[in-house]
Length: 577
Ligand SMILES: O=c1ccn([C@@H]2O[C@H](COP(=O)(O)OP(=O)(O)O[C@H]3O[C@H](CO)[C@@H](O)[C@H](O)[C@H]3O)[C@@H](O)[C@H]2O)c(=O)[nH]1
Ligand SMILES: [Mn+2]
Image (tube, rainbow, N blue to C red; front, side):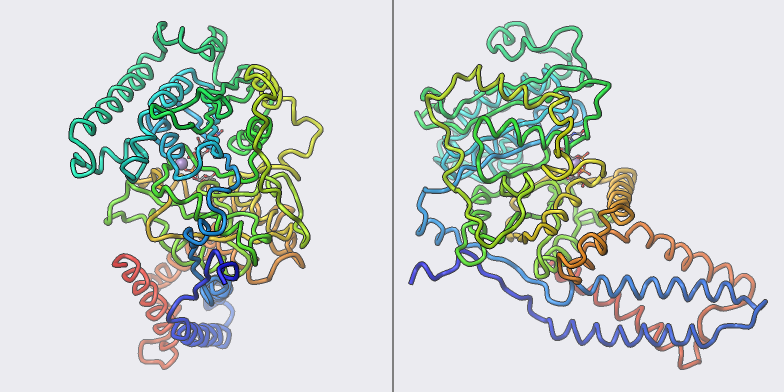
């Protein structure tokens, strides 16, 4: 009986019939608008070109609206059951490698990275099966210093988290949310750990401010001697430091329990070699981790995204280990949530529409996109494997033989894999690993995975699994949107154009879902035309819309009001959820 119960459930949203009815009437309205536009073209010389421009803009909107319906037609929501996972697998769970990327100790301060790292190390998961890797594209001794401090503080922080089952497990987030959990433990114990954390943060911030690590600390770890006068962030040898070796019997916390493996990596950077940004870092991490832990599951987050739910790893495994569907699932994506936005954020940076509407819709069509953070992949699919029905994952992979080799040997091997020239003449960045040459490398990579036959799953639990730092100012918002629109539009124009490349490989509706974003950038042309031209025409005394007394005004008003009212209602519903 127990075996036949699924590890996750797929629910459809309520109110689908109402939505579809509304969509059908809007479609009718759009058709009437187009019909009016096409049958009332003015004579040549009386503003025909302007009129046809309006027709073109409206045709574009109509097509774009149809594209957006793909994800709105039958969205789903997934619900994993970790109790069933526990009943069936106990602690016999696969090893998981966690990749964190950071790029600059000044814009992404090491003290922030440290809290993220600690939150990930503190997952409710067998620590001997967890390995956390930090890629530092800033190649900074300050970030290594932060990591070294984290490896020491973890010995106190992890037992504290587990003993009192606290949440969130990012110490920065935890201490800023709670001003004394005396009901959990004695005030003395609480203050002690808080004090320890504050002092560590202060030491790290002081080091960052002064730009160097104190000599007496340098003497305590060999890793610091990798840095000398000549090293800069753009020109340095590969650095790999295993700060906590999970295979080492002595790597235990202050209660004697095993600690997760913790690794610092700064891949080699040379001015004459292109580094391919985050995608390059991810690929180096895939290789470096393969000689250290080689876990079959890889999770990745940006350094500003801490874990907010200590069961997120187990939740994700409910999908991969599900007996009916699991073998088809290539990756499990969580939404990108931010903890620094207020309710009054006027730029829509909370990504409500993407997170709550569109990703769930993509999930019903073949799976959400890979958005670069908060995602769990099978290692094999990141390395290019095609989906086949008979593929059997080796869930025991990754547990390395304890006596195999020394830490130094492993580090040397790992360094050679993080060298600039390693990828020359290989398929890395193309068929293997995260794709290069695109600003939104993640979307392109996820798309290739879908084309290789895999599905993905979107898990959006009520309690967010990850919390990051979102843009708050207009300048930051514009920069991010420009990057996303430009990046995705460039995929549209490239040989990976979703309609062409995925033709026959994925469902048409799924391809349409991708185009919601692929067409963001050209949408602006129709919008500019539509907001500027009719106003200019009014100055000249001609109206580009029907008279208010004409029956033809009805479809225009209907489409405008109903579509926007529906969006407002959805928004209100989400805000008050
Ligand atoms: O050369 C680089 C550049 C960036 N990063 C890291 O990549 C992450 C994302 O970069 P960021 O500048 O913060 O971009 P965002 O716009 O915040 O990123 C969003 O959009 C990106 C492109 O789609 C995704 O990769 C990210 O995961 C997603 O959070 C950060 O952790 C960086 O440290 C590197 O490791 N190396
Ligand atoms: Mn970011």
